[in-house]
Length: 298
Image (cartoon, rainbow, N blue to C red; front, side, top):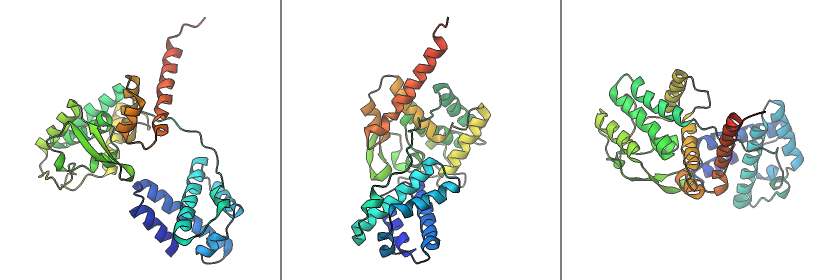
């Protein structure tokens, strides 16, 4: 496992992968190494990995499929293996073209599932009212405003410090992969942040987390996810109404309002325009629904 730990350390420290991606790679590759230990009955090192072929990888993926993994999970496992081999080539000089060109199951791109404008506004309004203390309600409202009104990821919102106070016209956000982008804050979002700051019972110093838990520690993503779960239950919204669905809604509603796709790409911090283009599918789907509902039939 020393080799595996070295690779995981590399992608954690040098590639700056998101925490959930790192967890997925760790799980997939631990499973892969465990399979190889039994499959080959030997310790797994660079020389053993160099000798593997596409047939061996397919045997592993077939085992995972028998365990009930979906096409998406199989493709993700193969992606982790390929990332490992790219690292092996750079660090240990191991080339394995047979595995590099191995293809996994084809995955159709899933459309994002944003919440509606009405649902987003109801969630934000209820967040302020549901809390046991005024400052907690103001905090929750401010966080949801940043997801829906500025398109931030949870990690980006929770990574802010008191240095952003009072709320500015623009925020400098450090996103995935260390990429930096400038995000404008509309007046409603700035007002929500400043309202929370005025009520917070803790010193929100420039070096300390902006959003705090009830005991003063940094708020964590699971607490925000729990908040949204509570809100969607109270409002009768589907399970797809998640914190990230508010970010999706930010992009989708901008696009529906006539915003330029490249501008939305910059606001979301997407490295590639193709990632942002998926929102055109969402808008087209909503238009198709409107036509289907309104068009006279026979």
